[in-house]
Structures are given as C-alpha cells and as structure tokens.
Amino acid sequence: MRGYGMLGIGKTGWIEKEIPRCGPLDAIVKPIAIAPCTSDIHTVYEGAIGERTNLILGHEGVGEVVEVGNLVRDFKKGDKVIVSAITPDWNSVQAQAGYGMHSGKVLGGWKFSNEKDGLFSEFFHVNDADGNLALLPEGMDPATATMLCDMVPTGLHGSELAHVQYGDTVCVIGIGPVGLMGVRGAVLRGAGRLFAVGSRPNCVNIAKEFGATDIINYRDGNILDQVLAKTNGAGVDRVIIAGGNVDTFDEAVRMLKPGGAIGNVNYLGSGDYIKIPRVEWGVGMGHKMINGGLMPGGRLRTEKLAALITAGRIDPSKLITHRFEGFDKIEEALMLMKDKPKDLIKPVVTIKW
Ligand code: NDP
Ligand code: ZN
Image 1: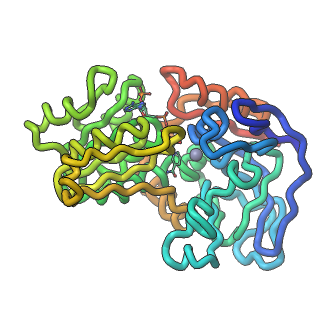
Image 2: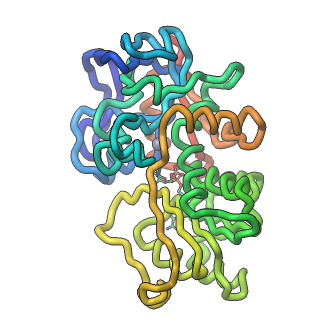
Image 3: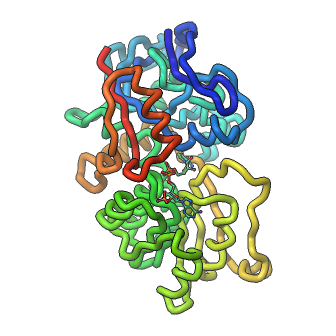
C-alpha cells in the first residue's frame, strides 16, 4: 500500500508499506476524509519528538472499516467511522486512573504519526477498536467529522484544563483551528468577557462568530500589556494557550489572577524550558495553576462531541477553508499546513476509492 509520510526530520514523501495486520481487538480502516495537523509539521520540520524514518503521517480521519478482529463487538466491515487522534489502550492502569491519553507512558495514547503509521495511507490500523472508533452519525459530512478527531477535542480540552466557570474573563492565546475551538469551548462553559489572540483575518472573524468579545493582535505589541490595558490592570481568570511558544507562559502567568488557571494544549515544538516569572507567580504561592494536556481520545468522548455538532452547539465545518478531492492531494494539503497562507484555517482531503 501507499502512504505519505516523514522520511526523516525535514523530509516528507510517498512511502510503500505492507498493509497492517489486524489483531483480535483491532480494526483496519480505509480513509474517506483526512486532515493534516500543525502537529505533523512540528514533528517533521522541528523534529520535535526526535527522528522518525519512513513513518506515515496523519492522525485525523474518517474512514470505512475493512476488517475487524474476532473480539471486536460493536463494529463491522463497511461501517463508516470517526477515528480519534488519540487511541488509548483502555485496559492500561493509566486509563483506569482517568488518563488513557498517557496509557503505558506519558503521551502513550498518541500512536498515529508518532509511534506507528498514521492515516495518510490506503489502509491504517486502529488498536482497541471498540474503545477508539465512533460511528459516523447519519447525515454528518465526513469532512466536518474529521474535526472531531483532534481540533474539537483538543480545543475543548483547553477550556477544561483552564477550568472555565460562568462569568470568567478568559484569554485564548492562538486562534488557529485548535484555539478557535478553545474559544467555543470556553463560551459553552460560561465565559464572560473573552479575549482572542491572533492575527489572521479569517480566524479573527470566526473567533468573533464563536463568541470572542475582544480581539488582540500579538503583532501590535505584547499580549500582556494589551490585556492589562483592557482590564484596568486586573488581568484574567483563565488562559487557554493554543499558540505561541515556551515564552508564552511568562505572559500568561503575569496576566492571570490568583486562583486562576492556564490550560495549555499547544505542542511546544522547541525550547528546553518554560519560564515562570517567580514574583508574579506569587513567589511560588500565587495559586496560579498551570495545566497542560493531550486531548482525551476514544469513542465515548468522540460520540459526545459529535452530539454537540448534531445539536447545533458547535459548527467546526467553519474551520475548513480548503477542500481537496483524491488521495494524492494529501501532499498539497500538508504543504499548506506547513506554509500557513493567510487564508488558511484547516484543509481537508476527501477520498473516493
Ligand atoms: P495554528 O498554527 O493554526 O494557530 C496558531 C495560533 O497561534 C495562530 O492564531 C497564531 O496567530 C498564533 N500565534 C503564533 N505565534 C504566536 C505568538 N508568538 N503569540 C501568540 N499567538 C501566536 O495552529 P493549530 O490551531 O493548528 O494548533 C495549535 C497548537 O495545538 C499546535 O501547536 C498544535 O500542534 C497543537 N495541538 C495539540 C494537541 C493536543 O492534544 N494538545 C492536538 C492538536 C494540536 P496568527 O493568526 O498570526 O497565525
Ligand atoms: Zn492533530
């Protein structure tokens, strides 16, 4: 079979591989809609998780089941399924503790395009199929459903990690597709005033549509000064980080009120340490919580987030700015993600076999 992947740090290309084998609890799936992710870019071009050779990329996709193992109960050949980007081993002790995304080890639930071949392939393998697949709801556009693999769960997790409460003043740093879902998640959890930090005009427009009350352009000066100016020096209750770099935490801690929380979902591709300002962190006693988390994966989570689309509470189709047809278009879509033209939010490739 053919797949598009990472040949080594800084290099991508088409790769020939054997079709993966299906274990008793697993499924083999053929993609019908796939999306590249900023994470693929960190992995290839920043070498953020180290060297990988001939690894098929991709972890966001909807597909058709072509085979299931003999112990799989709820899925069968021909089912159209949403595949979570994070596929925990559900019988691990970490999953029992509520952290399936870290099954086996930290980030252990992140298998596709990290530890095993991903979805930019004619066929791909899904572990624990009953726990990690979700049926594509009747009538849902497969391209829209690809946003349920990673963008929706990650962005919404940012608002969970920041513990957004009714009436909170929230700052969302970074409004690419992940941050935009962070905005929507914070609004659904009851945010009051909401600052969205970004510069691309179509992201700014969607941030407003999703419920941001104020836009801050980080290119016009530092974010902290702009937030403090708009809040009469009071700062914010919650910060969701979905963009920036290791230095972003410095500003986030400074703008946070005591008792507040930072929820980071940004994949920090470079830099060895995160700097926390000692005095503004209350010399270690400021009750300013810093949380960072990989999205929770799996079937139940995917089904619940799909219900938010069906009920009209979120509309992630607004994130899709570029649509391609045909397996071979994966390369073009991934390069768009690398070059990030101004009008891009998220590309999706649909495939008819
Ligand atoms: P994008 O690159 O599309 O968006 C990044 C956003 O951050 C943009 O709004 C950009 O602004 C803004 N930004 C860039 N530099 C700065 C800066 N110095 N200060 C403040 N804001 C800045 O990324 P995605 O939305 O696709 O992904 C966001 C992050 O989430 C990535 O690191 C990705 O790898 C990660 N991720 C994490 C997952 C998890 O489970 N935790 C899963 C999936 C993704 P501008 O408008 O100018 O472009
Ligand atoms: Zn992703």
